[in-house]
Amino acid sequence: MAQLQGKKIAIVATDGVEAVELTEPKKALEAAGAKVDVISLKAGEIKGFNFDDPGPKIKVDKEIGQVKPEDYDNLVLPGGVANPDKLRTHPEVVKFVKSFFDAGKTVASICHGPWTLIEADVVKGRTLTSWPSLKTDITNAGGNWVDKEVVNDKGLITSRKPDDLPAFNKTMIEEFAHASSLAGAR
Image 1 (tube, rainbow, N blue to C red):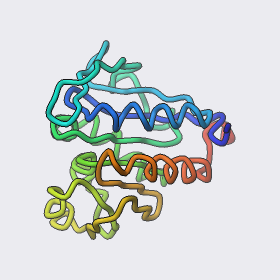
Image 2 (tube, rainbow, N blue to C red):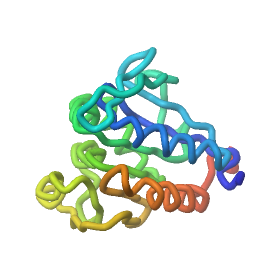
Image 3 (cartoon, one colour):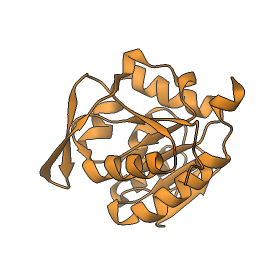
Image 4 (cartoon, helix red, strand yellow):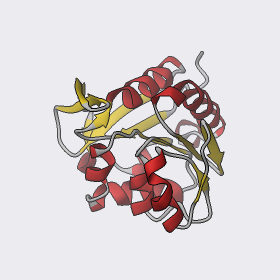
C-alpha cells in the first residue's frame, strides 16, 4: 500500500500526548508510504500517556523551530489532555498549524487535538468532532460539533477518541492521498 509515496507528514505533539493517538496514525501513514516527522517543542523524546497512566516515550524527529509548513504535505494533531493544552500556548505551533489551513492542506486531529485548532482560529464554520468535553469550546469558536466516529469537513478530518482510530486512519490516508503532493509540485 504505497498510496502516500512521496508525501511528507508532520505530527505535532509534546509531553502528555495520548500515545496511541500518535503511534497508530504514524504507523498507518508509514505503511501507506509516507515519510512522517514527529515535531515537538523540544528535542529527544516526549512522554506519552495511556489515558491517565504514564505510557511510552516517543522519539522526536525535529523541533518546531527547525521546520517550515511548506516542507510538509499534511498535518496530524493527536490528543491527550496535556499535549494540546501545552501546544496551544506556543505561538510558533499555532502559526505552524494555521499555515496548513491558509495553504489549503488537509489536516487530521483527534480527541483533544482541536484545542490547538481553536487557538489557530480555524474551526469557524466547520463541522468537527472531538473528545466530548471540547463541544462547548468548539461551539464558542464558531464550529459545529457533532458526536461521530470521524468527520471530514473540507480537508479537516477529526475523530473523538482512541476507539475511533481505525476510521480516523482510513479517512486520513484516503484524504491525504487525494491532496496535492509537495513531491509533485517540486
